Image 1: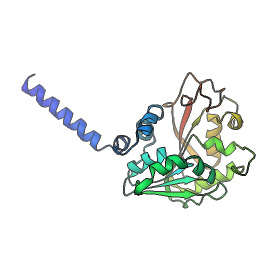
Image 2: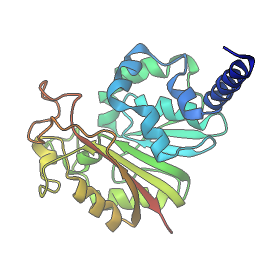
Image 3: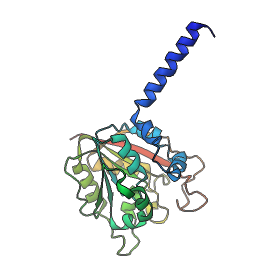
Image 4: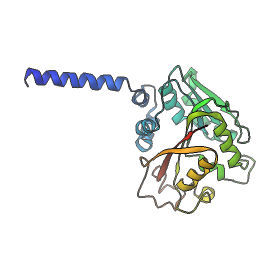
Length: 250
């Protein structure tokens, strides 16, 4: 290889290394403290691509709604960094469901910029105009799920979304990722299949005062016909999902 060619290669590799080093999202995904279990989940979640599509930035205050064991909470904590903050919100049911994983994730003072918030749907206790972003991953449909037991009180979805709108700053983002239901099914599939229709989600959050900013096909799966419960072993981890990014205009 000639000297000019070697020089150009060195410059390219240096610039590539610097670009990667300056990418907080890629650094978060590659963080040495992340567990092998989370890295395995990355294969289906595509967190680097999703977080880059959303556009989350260092220094932001973010609420991970119904965060459960905190897979996204940890990623977001690394992205927003020490100047940012992540609120890991759960109701009592989600807290119990994710307790084992959360105990491992947050042990020994890990993720110091994460605040844990246990609050119920009728009073989320989120800061007014305090969030740069709120995110719901695979849980929005639960606003329309009712098991008829005290462990999961029925949720007033309209009131829930109004609280999220009040908590997001003007110009801030509301992100929704969920399992796709059949076209025309609205919220009905939430009960038996744990799915919800994309068009219904768009209408729901728009009615709550958000404006749809963009959507992504990153998590689409053509092999899912939207007829099977998402916990069925035939489709678990391989569901077709939508990604919606809304913005609060005022």
